[in-house]
Length: 549
Image (tube, rainbow, N blue to C red; front, side, top):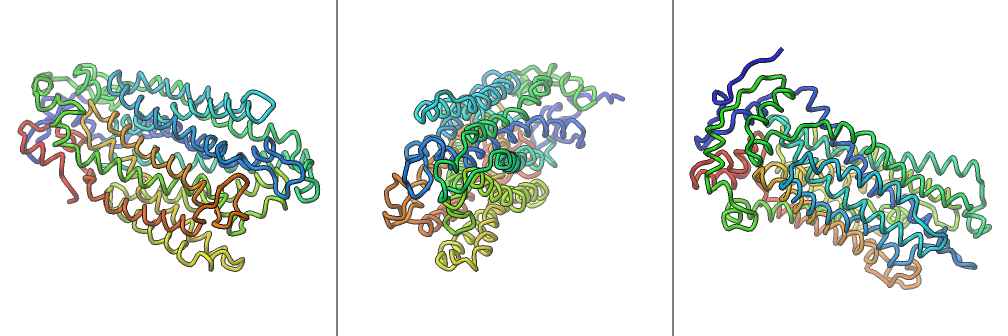
């Protein structure tokens, strides 16, 4: 049953005494409905695929080394050369950075919906193509694998600003943080799914094609069928994205984009009438006033933008950059850390399938008992505690636990103490996700104007991926032993795992300090946060630079 609501009667007076469009007010005060959860699933499955594709490569890099870089007579199984390992691990992150900038900008120019399907198609096609990498030699396979993973990254990158912005603009202000966080929390299930898929498939392959361990028969320890295993693991990432394409195309454009950027209040009211089951009658007078107000039409590179949003943008970019150095270092190279402390056996004591299984087991356990709970703690508490408190808390405990691992590192590597190391290492993941890994995604989708929201989120996310690239490339070399006789093949001596962990602890501490530049957005309308319902300069500056309550 429809309720008739006149938009001019839904005008909201903000704290500074200014108007908000009624159709947007209706969204802000709407009760949680089925469409909210539908939007979470549709947007969230993109992030499920994102996480599966980005982190599944860590499960198969050791296998790729065994298959394509085996050296006859070597005491250890083959490993990817440093430059190849860096490319395989980092090329998708480079593509993601480009996708975040380009599709973030395009989402503001063309609309969220028009661009949303393109990113999903790219993810599906390139996930499949990654598993179909061409050639029989190492150069051909690695070149085509990196090519397709780069474009996969571009599609994944586009999903960041678009999904965050769409969920932010659909949500009510009371539970907006939880809804955006729930979309991002699907990453945890994507990481878990990657681990489970690798566990199941490696077990099946090991049962069907048994082989000796490397130290017994180096060549036979990697069966020819292993070349199918890594390909299947990567290709399965296309399935969840493909399943949601139809529903993405059915979603209407967000009312905030239609009303504030396209300036079609009538269409915005019609679209939201269907979504909210409320008959909204648009009054264009307020919208026309906003459209002609020069103070609300500034560009990204204008002095007005710098004045209103410069410090918050610095806060969102710097915190995301610093977080991802630590977060991606831990995620992409947790297998190396676990090998260093002995939780994953030495490679020569396993065949190829056993090694994939052990690495996948470690990732699955960490995601199940640490990563996923952290994500959903944030979903539950973000609209109660606020974004600022959760981010500060997360960075603080990440710093504490990283130093707790690093300073007594020689204690933790003893066999009797490995369980303690794993518990503390898991807690760093928990507080990354019940902390800045989620809040750095949420806040940029809330505090910037509608016409620049997707662009600014893309810039913030791209800064994060720049940090991820630093982590992926830097940690690969930094974590190598100081003793050149103990480094992985082809790598120069590094600073060791202990000093690398100390560096990550310092980075987390700096991230905590930079959080003070980020405004609190809990319980406020998007227009109040961005200054789009403000008519006088003083009030707008106050709204855009508001801090914690």
